[in-house]
Image 1: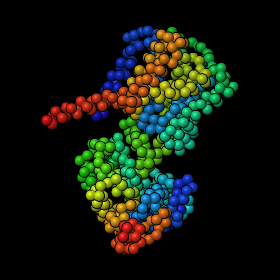
Image 2: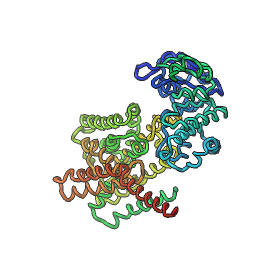
Image 3: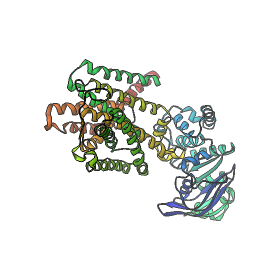
Image 4: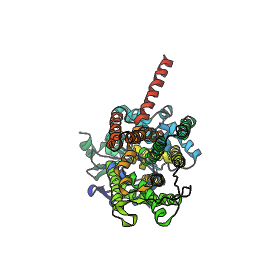
Length: 234
Length: 327
């Protein structure tokens, strides 16, 4: 579904990502794990068109998307849940969600998706009329994910959702991602919390200083020496 | 919800409409016309800065382009200022699109600085442009008073009516944008450009729309201002003074709200017009000193402007009421 081939990118001519290739198949939950500064966020930004590759190709359902502007990529069915949540803090939860449905025109359709999203996130339903800034960190993260779902994406890109959440909430949000994946949405998760991310992923890639140094199924990687040594201090 | 937001607005508009007839004093009527022009400019500016969050310090450019376009057409070709107003709107919109597209690549303060530079560049351009009489400015030829020539010599009421209509139009446009999808998109862009992009909003295009509408409205007021004062020169039209007045009054009243510019202009314009009347030339700037002090106070205690203070008070009262109801 998503194919990244020999991607090189970065900011203002400072290269961050070196020759990265990976793919995500339909229905999978794929993680990219790596420590701070490995370039995880940069890869997601390149996929959703917020930055351009220096070289290499990004393909979505057979179409090259690395030359398309961000807003067109969204309408193809890729939703990006940005790092640090970025909810529209002065707007109500409902308005935040409705804005997520930007690419959908029919009001009835929007209501339908809204209902589904509230099914996954009953907590947000309770807080529908509240301003987003009054939500807790975990609820804001849920709102950001829910907003991503509002565009009926085929592929959901989730960036570092554990950031600033207490461990029990991290588990909770991970559960939700699994639930989303079960509903048939492909998920690409980028995460620093290596253990949790590997446990839930179908497949995962390990990123270090801009290069992919290993990949495999989540459980394979969990037991591999490479990951143990590098990220779990064992 | 919608109803309660409209009705105070209608009351305010009706009150403004009857004011010049209740107090038929020339100075007062003059003050009202200037008030309407600046409140309208504030509404226009609010679209791009209050809603979309892109601070513009260069709205004098669009105001001036509107004034110059209609004046040149009238002065050189005797074309009615009404037609001139439409042409001015078109020119200003095009200029806005052309210059702000590259500027939108800049963020935050840098965008603000760029817009300031645009107004300054426009000023220098007009100062050294002989065809538009350069720095000497243009005295608009005085003709018989008529609606077609947008000149009225015996009474200020017709000017008031025109200013009032333009003002109402700008309120309606601001209100329409605020209540519709575009308003939400602009607010989303203001809150977080990145998040707005990540949900698929073409942020550049919407910022551009907001800027173009804003410039169009500013240009219309420019034409009216020129026809009212009957003299224009680059120094008064493209001055930082005008850009800043628009900014200040909106910020004082309340950013991102259609009432903000009305409240701000209702304070600043009487202040500046009456200090000018009382102190004459020596009083120049006193209004801005007082106004500056007000801004400092508002910025320290209530950054959302006077309107924000009101809202907060209402919320506190409501909160107290809820607490009582719960107890």
